[in-house]
Structure formats: structure tokens, C-alpha cells
Length: 195
Image (cartoon, rainbow, N blue to C red):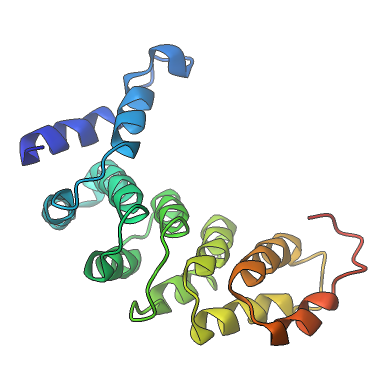
């Protein structure tokens, strides 16, 4: 796929306003085509597109590029591009873009050499949409620093205030936790809050 063809796909992925359902929405079909991409060579082109579209008004192109990058990286191990995607979290400010990026990162199995500090920062974000996606995304990194960030939320005492944070943290720790974390998870075993 050429850079022009990839850019065209990214533009098609931007939702229109005149469609009431996915059966006739070109953006929906463009997303399904994007999910099928597997060519690692596209990662370089996606980085160029992201770097070349840094203006606030171009966030939809970046968002779509992050989506495609996340889908390709979920099928292959490319630590350099994984780090690029994680580092891009610090550039974005829109909560919807950040949440979508974190959801994509959550599908990737990050290698231990990928620095996840940007994901951890997002897990403390005041915007709940970003915070919940970040806690859930930490499950993709099986490192002690990720586990400790998730444990922070599991240790929260106020189950009503942190209901969703606890749910996402339990799910993440269930994937990346160690045997030592079982006692931490048992603290909430009798909780009345459903997960």
C-alpha cells in the first residue's frame, strides 16, 4: 500500500454525519478494512503521517492512524513502534483520542523494554474516560512497574468512588499479576459492587 492509499483510507475512516447506521457508512467499512492490515512496512508511513499532522484540527487523521498502528502492532512485535505509540500519548490532549489510543495499546503485548510511564500518567488522568482506558491498557505490559500502577487502584478503600477503576484494575491484575497479588485481590472478594 502506498502512502497516498493509506492516507486515503485514513480519511475514509473519519465518520460522516449523514449516516444513521453502519450498513451504509463508508467510515465503518474503512475501519473494517483497516483492521485487516498486517504489513509492517505501513508502520513507518503511519509514523510519518502522525508526525506530519500535528495540528489540533488534524486530530481525526492522527486518531485513525493510531487505530491502524494499534491493529498492526497487535499482530506483530515491533518494540520501536510500540514505544512510538506509547510516547504519542504525551502529545495528545483530546480525551477521545487518548482513550482510543489506550484501547489500541491494550490489544498489544508490549515487550518489557517498552517504557510505559506515559500509560501510567494517563491512569492518573482526571478525565475518567482516559483513566479507565489507561488502567485497562496496563494489562498489556507484564512488568513490575505496570503491576505496581495497577495495585495502586486495587488498594483503594472507597469502592463507591473508585468503582470502575477497581473493576479495570482487577481485570488488569488478573492478566499481569503474580501469585503474590492474590491476597490483594481477595480484599474485594466480598464486595457488593458487581464487576
